[in-house]
Length: 154
Image 1: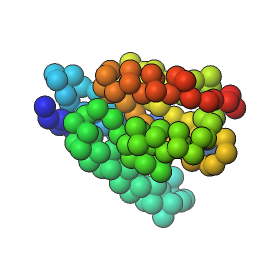
Image 2: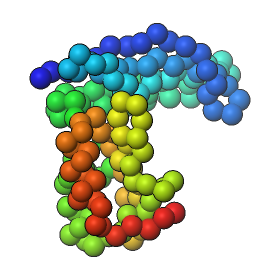
Image 3: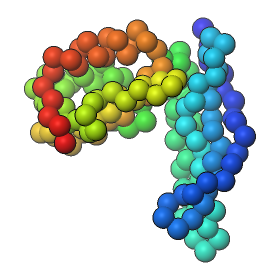
């Protein structure tokens, strides 16, 4: 299988507390489906030109990293934040150290239309993580492994 990427139509929405931003949705195409990855955001504040330029370039860079990771995993997942790019290796590390998951919003898994976010932190060691999972088999295996591990609500 292979994955390809396509940008959606840009739109203007609120960005931050006092400004607007131009959002360009980026999608992965796999198995005949178009799946949302993330938005490239360009802040629109004339007074903060350097900050806006930095934020826009960072948004592009983060999107490119996500796309590269999706190519490496054949579109199964990408890591947007974490000490290990592979969720299974991360969980193994958590188990080896007997750490406890700190759960935000009631669950480590937040389901969306086209993907599930596996995210949280650890109680004993600050190691926030966020993986976007597109593959049902990967998601099922992650849920099975994490199901019996120690957790504490935030």
